[in-house]
Length: 129
Image (cartoon, rainbow, N blue to C red; front, top):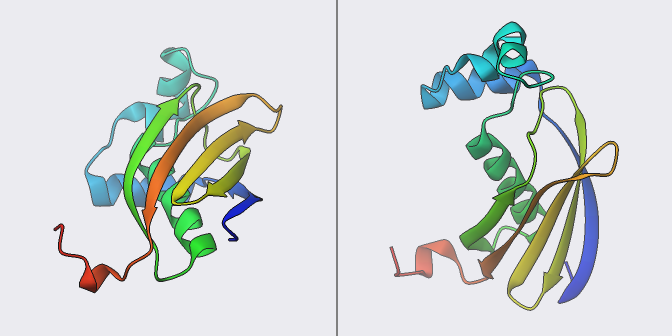
């Protein structure tokens, strides 16, 4: 991405993505895996794990920025649930070393809004770890 630019990327989280993430994370909360339980809790469908959403957003950011960049920190606000098998539009806007991101539902409502600081030095040369 150029120093000030905007891109858009479509995101969809499949049922298999959710099952795989549950296996890796150990988070088998029924609202992620059982539509019946999710609806009983007041949601319209199964919810995507918040950390899975953040990880996918981070992966898209990194892919757009290139291999030399890595994310230093996140500032994120979940404004609405992210549902399995629903399409979302992720908008990224880079200004200097700050990347803003905004996830919208198919209907255009805001779901997630946030920003991250980007470090463009090589990870193996970075000594803050």
